[in-house]
Amino acid sequence: MVGRKAAGEPVQYITGEQWFYGLPLAVSPAVLIPRPETELLVEAVLETADRLWPDAGGGARLRAADIGTGSGAIAVALAVQRPHWRLCATDLSPDALAVAKANAERHGVSDRIAFIRGDLLEPFAAGGGDGDDRALDIVVSNPPYIPSSDLPGLQREVRDYEPHLALDGGIDGLDPYRRMAAQLRTLPSAPRIAAFEVGLGQARGVADLLDAAGLWPDIRIVRDYAGIERHVIASAP
Image (spheres, rainbow, N blue to C red):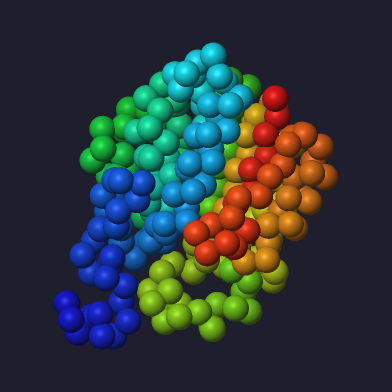
């Protein structure tokens, strides 16, 4: 184990576990290691949902989708925190979905999370099912956002061990956000909350994409523990 760590392998892959939002989660090289700043994305979604559905007192029966779920960290945390919610978790990687399913089973929420293999929001876009199956109240995503040219310069623990499918966001890192902004317009109705984690210097660009969609009058940016603009939360009253 010491030899593996000396070679740069993240300790989370060596132990097979990472804690997230108070929950121990299994991780493997098939998934991105959950980061503390992503816990703030979960907090922002919960806070915004409680504000938009105040009469429910946290008991609203909402349908949320975690796009690019990876280890399932976001979906599992939301399901644990809100027992009345139904969730969908999508990922392009079958190996990632297997890890996410195991984490949902570990925390007793697998009966409320549907795991779907698909590219971003394609499973919910036009032609992807009937209207009820595609209707969502909340969309949340921590997609790949590293510009392709920046990948070689990442620290070796990330560059050499974490899955590039979960890191590479295209030339400027914004490709997944452009695609999701377009896909959101194909849903039967706009989700009242669309929440995204973003990379350094990307928050304003993602906020502009969501503003251009014209679906959410309230778009705010949340800073992480280092003061970096890390999350974009769009909501509609």
